[in-house]
Image: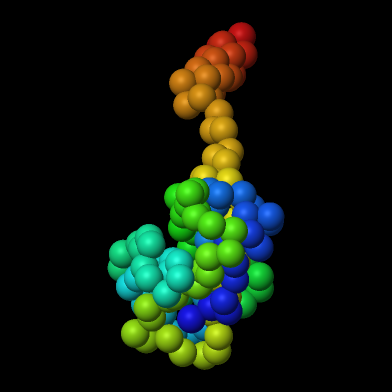
Length: 134
């Protein structure tokens, strides 16, 4: 269970809608995260059923191994209390870290157009074939 926060503490940092990042802390063993819950005034307001089993890619480095976006405190009183709860039946090797992430989703990195890459490659091959004929 996370420390107890107030809605005003969280919204001052990340706004009403935010994400959670989970930094798994393990070495060689698989971790299982089956559920993540946000409790407001002791009652579950939102939860994610995760079903993740795997090894940490960032192993306690302060970077997220798993992201959960779409948490919302809209309409809650500034004095309401908030806690986060991880259900991890196979937790081992140390404490996991949860941290707040501003925004509603991860910005995706735009990928170059596949057709442009294929076209450039084919044009290059055509140029090489033409050069060899001469």
